[in-house]
Amino acid sequence: MYQIKKKSTTQYAEIACVFALSDLSEQIKAATKNNHVRAENTQLMLSYQKGQITMTEYKVLLCSLYEIYQALEEELDTNASHPAVAPIYFPQELARVNSLQSDREHFFGSDWRKKVIVPAATHRYTQRIRQIGRENPMLLVSHAYTRYLGDLSGGQVLGKITQKSLGLSSKEGISFFSFPGVSSPNRFKQLYRSRMNSIELTEQERAEVLEEAVSAFEFNIQVFDDLQKMLSVTAEAVDQSKSRTVNFPSSPIMHFTMGLCVAVATIGMGIYLM
Image (cartoon, rainbow, N blue to C red; front, top):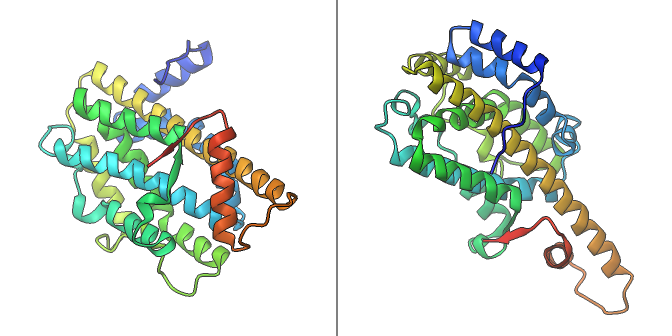
């Protein structure tokens, strides 16, 4: 469960500045500014920015993104008529689950569900999304804004970086970054923010949405960090396996799978098999 820490005097001053803004979208942007910077400076995201993302990193990221978007989109579908959700409900334009499923099938095959693992942080993130979907759907606005507008903003650039870094000759495996239902990302983001700003909220409800937006960034940071830990343990396990006398098949898939098995058995952070 995400815990709210006691705020410093500086943080209270920042909150006052946030509430001086009138639009909800601008308030969320201001409230999550520092968290956004922290997310961009996680090791996994820095690798992306440098164009150094590896196939293994990309695959495990896809697995977590699928779980997150599956939870988010199921809860948005369930609560589509909620007064806070309806204005920002754009399944035709924004839905990511089918794209992520296609990407996973490209890399893992049709039986990808049997081959995929995600870190505990991903499990906590999806649990939170499902909890607010049941108990307080208004807060889905925070997670939808954080995920969709973030991926829409950087989708084209990150897609090109991924294709170049992994040496992919086609768009297969990177459909997550494409939004065929959005002809102009900038105009659509303006529409989304306008719809979001039209949501009627009390002062207390607005504060809760802002707090949840900060939580959404924190969940993402935890996912990135846990993925990096998982990859580090996997790499170490593979290196150790190479020094042993037991001979295993030399295919990269076998090495990766074997490393993940050792990681599941040894890492303390907890990894969930789907």
